Length: 258
Image (cartoon, rainbow, N blue to C red; front, side):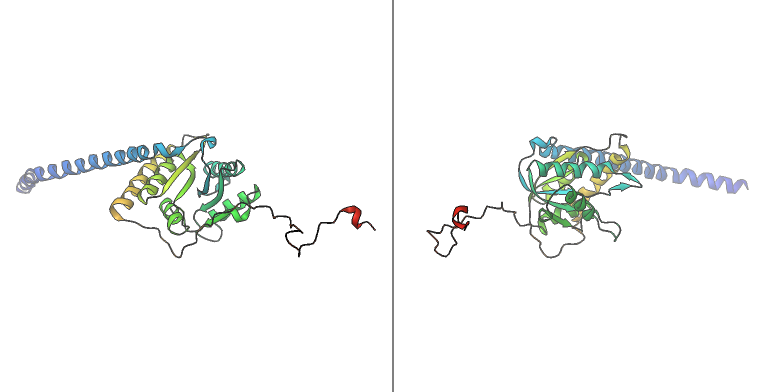
């Protein structure tokens, strides 16, 4: 028994330096990983700071605004992230800042359709249907931004979402040579959103790896569906009976009252 105990102690003494080295190496990897995640998070914020707009009055007139989708309800509660994106989109249209919308989101199944839900709310607010374009394959932010250029043929647009999301969306836009700005709309006011913010930190790391390491592309591409510029409707000219002998002259009431 003593011999077994002595052998075990001898084995521990022999393997301890290797185990110590492995643990130290794992600790260093952990520290480097944490530092990298934090550095990427700050870098993503820094690279977008000059392209984020906080006031609707400061938004320049643009042809297309991309509204990034999210669920309208969380359980039975209206999702504030959704609410403020849609309200801002409506306000931009009313102020004639945006001519057309590209509503991009997930359409995972028949009962969950982010683009159509957004479209329905814009229609109720008086936005004409011909000004609304739908992207049903905006499964992730990367898909929404890249498809706006590659499928809908627009590379100069306004993004509508919350500030933390703006920063990641603009990183993706830059990597694809898309000239985009982002309107940072309000978020929830009844809680701090710390869980969302923590999740965003890791989402930014994933986006960095997708863009610069793994070369991830959208899940679906397909044929182009260019968003056509929506020309202003010009009033039809009144025919001139002198210049156009086939036109019917506009009769005066006195001449037709027989």
